[in-house]
Image (cartoon, rainbow, N blue to C red; front, side, top):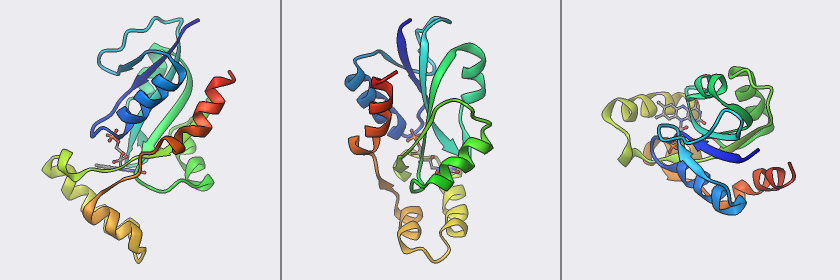
Amino acid sequence: MAKVIIYKSKTGHTKRYAKMLSEELNIPCYSYKDAKASENDEIIFLSYIYASKIMGLSKILKKYNVKVVIAVGALAYSKDYVETLKNANNISLPFFYLRGGIDYSKLNFFFRKFLSIIGKDIAKDDKELLNLFKNGKDFVTKNNLEPCINYLKNI
Ligand SMILES: Cc1cc2nc3c(=O)[nH]c(=O)nc-3n(C[C@H](O)[C@H](O)[C@H](O)COP(=O)(O)O)c2cc1C
């Protein structure tokens, strides 16, 4: 069975992780819209998080044989956050969380406004988070992907 990466990305962070993973594992990588995979392929699905929801996950689970789910969000990694996301999205599959970032230049007015309002609420007095929600930031590194790469090389 072939392994195939399918990703969903709005502002590019998830796409960059998907491409890095594809190069590292030497397997094809398609965006959600252009996915060329058969029902038998083993799918590694990457998508971004909006309001704790992993976008497109329920649709992809209905259509494909998903083996691993990788979610990309703006908040820092922690074991608690990983558990919160797994519960909020009903995930029993192997799951990884990667920090993406916020790129305000690629968001429309509605999402920019939404993030700056909820951002203040989430950040409270945390200076790093206040700055993140005010100015945006890019946290994508290959280093973040290492645990996924190690896991996927061994299955
Ligand atoms: C409306 C909105 C809601 C978001 N909600 C969350 C969230 O609940 N948790 C989180 O970690 N990041 C959240 N983010 C941040 C995105 O997940 C982050 O920008 C991610 O890197 C986007 O991936 P992409 O560049 O592939 O589209 C939110 C962003 C927007 C615009």
